[in-house]
Length: 145
Image (tube, rainbow, N blue to C red; front, side, top):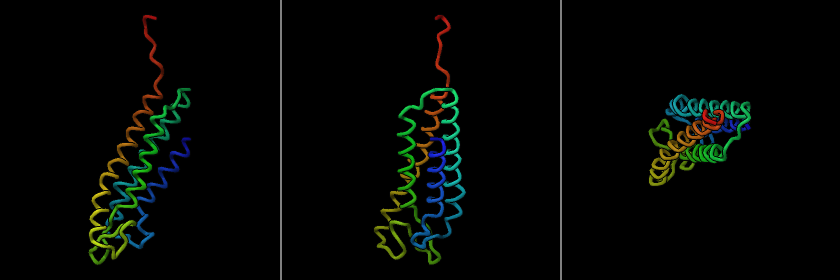
């Protein structure tokens, strides 16, 4: 499962950074999205993969919360990649769900939706890392027993 988590993190990071190439909407913000969104997301995915490995080595179970939070992060990441806008050379905004030349209202709706998806993408993955860290700790043994 560690490899699956790392693979999903890599795919979503690439989709966030370069997904707008599908509608030929790579613009000036691509470098920012790569450096400040895709790379940190990939690093958090690497951390989660590592924590899952530590949990397995300690022979502790991985709780359902880790998987639910990871899946929520992946869904938010895909939704963010679909809605993240980029500035085109002519100064207009475009995204996968609002390609170049789309109605301005559609572009505004897409821009309004992308920020909550980005926040969810990172918060859910960070929470999955935290829960996985708690999963990997040894069981508490009361010293009086």
